[in-house]
Amino acid sequence: MSNLEIFAVLLSVIAVSLTVKKHILCWGFNFVAAALYGYLFYLYQLYAETVLQGLFMLMAIYGFFTWKNTATQALQVQHIAVNSALLQMLGTFILGLIFGLSLQHFTQADLPLLDAQLVAFSLLATFWASRKYVATWALWIVLDIIYVGMFIYKDLMLTAALYAGFIALACWGLVQWQQSRLNLRQN
Image 1 (cartoon, helix red, strand yellow):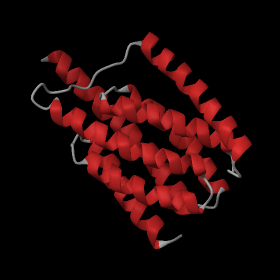
Image 2 (tube, rainbow, N blue to C red):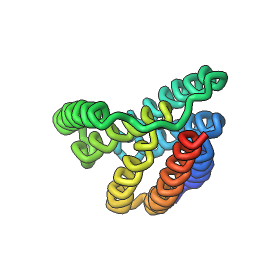
Image 3 (cartoon, helix red, strand yellow):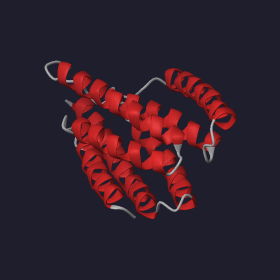
């Protein structure tokens, strides 16, 4: 456990908590946390996770501007159509597989196939968060459970604990966003 990991964990908890509350500052905290984790994962040879953190930084910019530009139109919490979700998940799986096979063939990455699938689906979950789809939280719950195991395997215990906490935050987010959706429908 390093100071870098401790600081990245703290910023990540703040970022996810702000996302649950639908506060636009979540994207700034996500950006900085991703930069720190990108460096940490590089040090631990989790190259797909390193790439993911760079993409998270880009998604944080996208999410910020999506939420900012729709503030006057009030981008509301919404459900994603089942067909759309399934199609996006299939595409995500295929891209994750291609990425994982590339990492397996061209790098010394540890756990390349698992790591790449987690990366691909994390990007999908982040995109869904930027669109305020309730399903983002269900996807994060599944991903975070798998991440906990991977980080324990890599002996990143504080990060594993963070992702265990993310499971609880994602459950909280799911309840909050579903309630927000119900309140919108009642008004």
